[in-house]
Length: 77
Image (cartoon, rainbow, N blue to C red; front, side, top):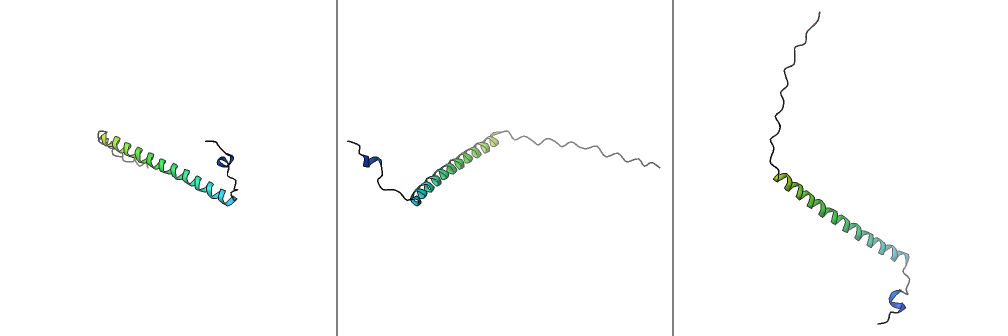
């Protein structure tokens, strides 16, 4: 097989509108792929966090300290 110039270069020029559409399409595909990957990662991390919380021993809430009753204010005459 011999490579010809026609195989590597497109002799027809693309209009600026076609170039813009191709760029837009490619950019949107990349953004969608990144969003999908981000959502998958978020779901995975959320599942791991929930699993870790479930495995952790349920700790009792620390008892609240009781405040000593307020001393009666001394009125000075």
